[in-house]
Length: 339
Image 1 (cartoon, helix red, strand yellow):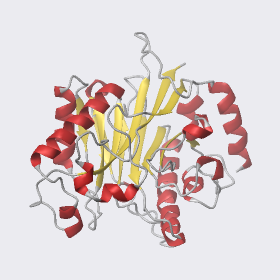
Image 2 (cartoon, rainbow, N blue to C red):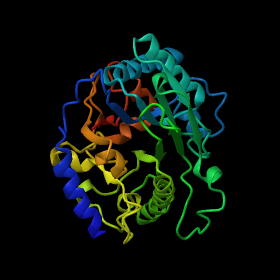
Image 3 (cartoon, rainbow, N blue to C red):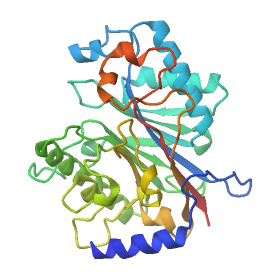
Image 4 (cartoon, rainbow, N blue to C red):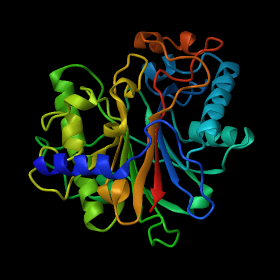
């Protein structure tokens, strides 16, 4: 919408955030660091709990190899130190719990594991969220369970099989929220039919986010949205345009795609340099009365470099080679600061 173009321009000028350097923490008003990372077929070596052939094929080649990858992922996460971490392409709750344990053993923050089983039966991939214990107790829901009577028009909506909404500081006592973090892994694929599915999935996320904003919640939507176009070619006709509210004339459904604050040559989130992974936020959090965006970056891994040929990652043997990067995706990080 024209309005969001104006708001985005004001947001970019007003935040004045540093797109690369995360801020130092303040003892008086600690910032809130939120990260998304697709961990790419992050499966253990146990094939007995997998039903699909594909899931069994993509499992870790051995328990030793899995433990090494688990430790490598934990080390990367400890270095980033997120308060809230959304992950995609994890196998199940057990793997997410093991990741949280590995982070703690590596000297990182203690995290609450937030997980609800998804509905991707073909790959058995799922999403989950780790929330720092310092942020208190949380609630989680899937959108179709929270809003069972909405989104039934199949021409407009499609449930994302892999998504999760996490509600933090519901009563605002921590001075953060109420905040809802929505993570999703949208439909992959280069074809127009794939993009049409992503658009319907994105519309579910946007309209759920709108409901939350109308009730006074700050909103962050983040994950591997398999964005078909780079940020500077976002339109009302593609998935990211729909997810951020560009396809509607109103203002109440608008989210800010934080890729706007990244330099054009620093927006790639995948080994192929595609901008698949995004963080979008409500204006109340990005530049509202109490919060503003302080920094955003695509984090550089300390171990290995994601290969440009994404097909390499469909071969589990290559994923577990010594020195291999943890994933073919980069973590994307946003830091919000109290005003």
